[in-house]
Image (cartoon, rainbow, N blue to C red; front, side, top):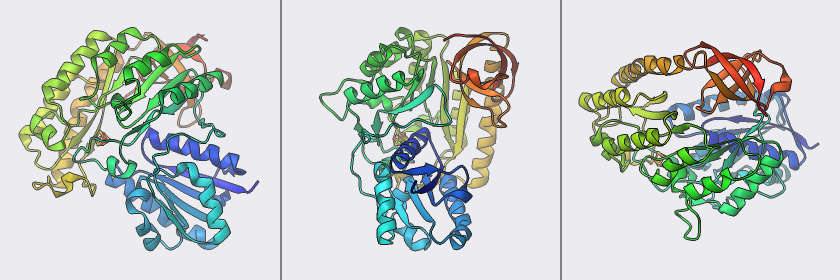
Length: 442
Ligand code: SF4
């Protein structure tokens, strides 16, 4: 064994999955995973730059590592992912005890870069865009924390350049993996006993549009649905402008496709949607919601919202509130706008002050809370299929998700992990459900 590594991950599921890849690559290269920071010889951060708060968390964590490095001079500290891509050499200049900075296209090289630091004693910054999407064939990423579910990346990057978003600048332009490779990876996951596959991409609905010879996203869904052993299929994230009638139809036609979609609307005001560069109107968004509910009446719909975008007036904000009331989402993820250079909106005038943003955020959360609660309450007393895939936060209960993506906690022993079970829902909490296992389904 060459040493132990610890990876601290921030951000979205793409980052979580990139960390899974890094773990598999480092294991293969002879490193073991440390259970705690203290026992690590290598500490890596997989960072998120989407919101200012996420970036601040990274720097605060790095600050805590200063004393660590002093006590263990041989310790290697590396910063990877979106903040690394955005800041590059500046991180090495600003923080003298960082050894390695590696960008969003360098995850597959992590072991090689660590070896280089060790061998030459040089500090390294590597943030080139390689557009290499195929993982090294000798590693296979599976989370140690998820039973029965696995992520599968189908594409990287984004071409949309929404005016508030930093993703195209830190993840690069859209590039889709070959469908043949995706399907082979899905087959291997199923052979390993995985029951639920979650397809990942910044904008999965535009899958294949960067490759003339490729199939469309809906065709990919239809192909994966046919694979023997697959029980559940999900995907994140979708862009409302790109979700096609064929993908909507898939919710009616494909038995494995779970009854949940995350469809970020961001604002209910046409004026703000235009300034955000989202390329759809409120009414077009509502039409898609209607079509989804028609195709799949049981579908659960969640969304993202930004409040306090530059120029958002009280009237624009009211449009967002009325959209929430009209759609009645199952859950929302709402955020205050923050400038993310070099995104275009950084230069937009009429910035909304922080106090106003905080008030708007509280208001949307207040409006949504009873809607979410009511939608959860109807699940009480129902029998729902749950895939038990993790332990509850305090580790005393088993935890899983319904097909409509509700979190459910149950009592039970370890032998149930990774199983699809039928649960009777007995209690409804603000963010989860509680129930009892009635039978094992697989
Ligand atoms: S679609 Fe817009 S919000 Fe989503 S990653 Fe691309 S640029 Fe960012």
